[in-house]
Length: 206
Image (cartoon, rainbow, N blue to C red):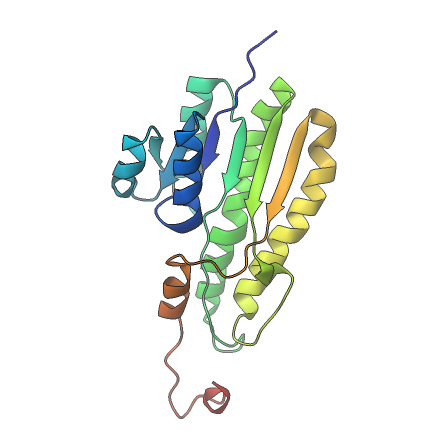
């Protein structure tokens, strides 16, 4: 019987949940591929046993290259943790459409593409797990968070559909929905807050 890979590929390991997950699994003996757009930021994870790779989830070539590295070394990705993501705040009316697109490229389309490229290897070995890091923001909605919430609602729907589609191949899909966690995520979200001047019709409500 062919060896079943249990190698873990994690996106978005430069800070927060991704970094903590990579370190936790590596210290417990898992084969971990920790990724970030700038792999130089992952030197400490390399020291605890992670393999580090460049991965920009908004870039097709970068995604394909990372998956190829893992599959060449391990045969397949055993566990895919889709963690890369960010938040931005602002009224739906005020957020530029290019910013909306960037939000979905990172939080949704990158996640989908990683699943698409990892699944053939998982199906071949008859085993695998996909862990999508969603958010309680995929169940609850607040003003000035519409675009971010929409991206996390999309992750919720995709995860639920995918779970049914792949379970017959021995592949399991988990959706993690964190609430507020003490990471740099809130700082990044705060940094994306728009500066409202008096001409903005929403200024009085913020």
